[in-house]
Amino acid sequence: MSALHVARFAIGLTVRVPHEALERHSASSPAAVGEALAEAVHAAVREQGLGYYPALDYFREAGGVDPELIAAADALAWLAATLVRNEVRTRLRPVFSTVTIQGPQAQAFALPPVRPSQPNALARLAAHYTPDTLKLDLRTSLIQKRPPAEGIERLAAHMACKWLKASFDSIEVTSARREDGDRPA
Image 1 (cartoon, rainbow, N blue to C red):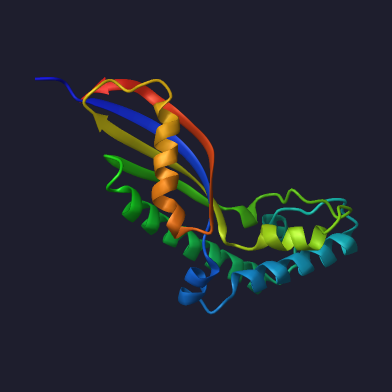
Image 2 (cartoon, helix red, strand yellow):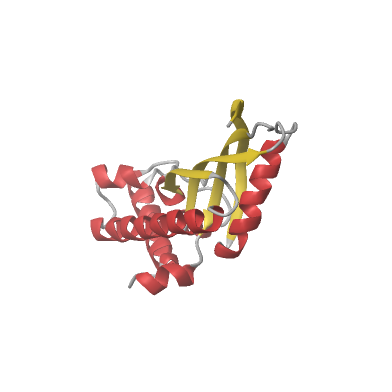
């Protein structure tokens, strides 16, 4: 009897949840929240004389942005994370022997990669603050009859994207690596 082999992977993804899916479960539009946040943050940055756009947590502490607007972004980000977790579990269960989701974290709460002096800063800031894009880390495993081949982590990432692409507006692999090496099952 031949041994089974377990290959474990860590796969980093960035996914964008369709606005229709979020609007089905929420009274708020993600795009409208992102635009309102961008305008409020832009005004606060000009008023405070900052040369950069801070993360939203800065405005929780310092004020300058309506707390209800930040709460709307929180609620949409929570909803998006819940939808992502459910979709990833449902879609990847037939593919991998185990799937564990770490994160997801909404991009809207990270430091924006936009400066006030850049062209189209307000539009780019609105896209950043729209709570529809999440980063997540997956821990997955595959059970195989043979020892895993070199580069199998790229195959695992490709499989995850293939099975998830219909669920999201966009999906990007940010990292893929083997963990713990090969272990007989």
